[in-house]
Length: 457
Ligand SMILES: *[C@@H]1O[C@H](CO)[C@@H](O)[C@H](O)[C@H]1NC(C)=O
Ligand SMILES: *[C@@H]1O[C@H](CO)[C@@H](O)[C@H](O)[C@H]1NC(C)=O
Ligand SMILES: *[C@@H]1O[C@H](CO)[C@@H](O)[C@H](O)[C@H]1NC(C)=O
Ligand SMILES: *[C@@H]1O[C@H](CO)[C@@H](O)[C@H](O)[C@H]1NC(C)=O
Ligand SMILES: *[C@@H]1O[C@H](CO)[C@@H](O)[C@H](O)[C@H]1NC(C)=O
Image (cartoon, rainbow, N blue to C red; front, side):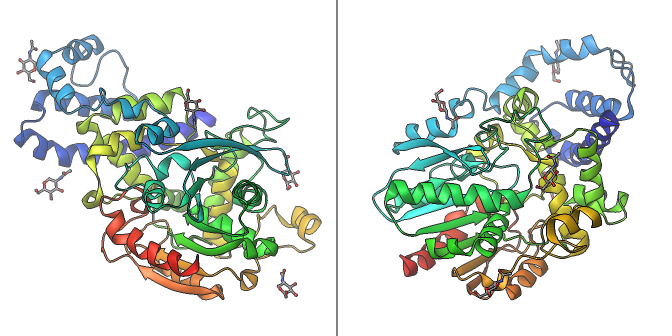
């Protein structure tokens, strides 16, 4: 069953790759970046993998050893090397090393939550007001800097003099640690964005305030980094007074209109109960989704550092999962971005978001009637008391965001009492990951963000 699920997922991804290979084939061969025949090999190889042909001889009659031979072809190697970023040292450095290399003062801290998780906080030291940045699902603190010093919000804030603190949610590659539990156990992974909101954020915010000796900080969240904030600010209301202003980039509550292709497919398969897919995965022992391991790292580092694959396979995977905005891709740092994702999340996080998709309620985790009664004294999980959030909040959303589409963002905005601004990014194709990696992030998002922040410090 586990293998079948994995296989299905891979098939879906490869179908998208195939579509792109077909469309990219024309463009690339006319540009002579890669010979027609080599492309055919790759294309057929993908086809063969997806339909499960024997691995030693492909449908084209080509033997596996021939392909290896072909890869040794000097012409092909030259082409790959020409457009490859494998010699770029940034793809091998971790975010802390990258920040230091770029001339910023960086520090790492370990924070323990009430329930024993050990989280990494990364700080770019500055003398100005404290800003706390919280990443989205499958991402980490790295993603505030990997796009480079002209794009990364971590750098842009540091350049303005802010003291920048970047959090990491439990379960991601930097926070896959617990005082007593091993990440090999189901107990370790028994959390969703709810626990990140009520335990991780408070622990990291208190720690940040204690070290900086401040009473308040500015909170910037992206995607799930906003969801977790709404959970904290409504469930632990004392934290509202610790946040001077909150910037919500691509805010998410109940993602009822999520349009990601993979999730749409899962919705179709599960008759609009996507949580069944993730709950099923969990019940057969798949507790973690897209971890940062040898396999994913080898793939994102070796494969996604090649221009040809950036434009095809790697693009397709991102496109199928969250959507893709070609016009905002910044190629010079793309390999570095890829080399630092994915960072891993619990399957239960996806299951919880899936519940929001089908129930359309931004509510606590649904454990089923019996367990709900025990935990919540009612048959359905309670919604978060969003009306009690007092922190001033600014919403930023993109028109082409498949994860936080405008209808969901505006619905959520109407439930919050203290919205100070709802900013539609003035670029039609602006998508979910553009809020961290877009070429024109400074102009399209950061400039307005800074104007708002300055009003509250
Ligand atoms: C190929 O070129 C056409 C026309 O220039 C363009 O519309 C299309 O997006 C390109 N495809 C890829 C995959 O780059
Ligand atoms: C290497 O590849 C190029 C382009 O595909 C081709 O023209 C050439 O014949 C190949 N050389 C060998 C030795 O296979
Ligand atoms: C980055 O690498 C350095 C040197 O190996 C290490 O001390 C540091 O903890 C690493 N940081 C992260 C965030 O992985
Ligand atoms: C997971 O957490 C829930 C809620 O805290 C609890 O009811 C359940 O027993 C836990 N399950 C496991 C396997 O630890
Ligand atoms: C919301 O705040 C009001 C007033 O402080 C309080 O009475 C109420 O219990 C809060 N609601 C929830 C669900 O916490």
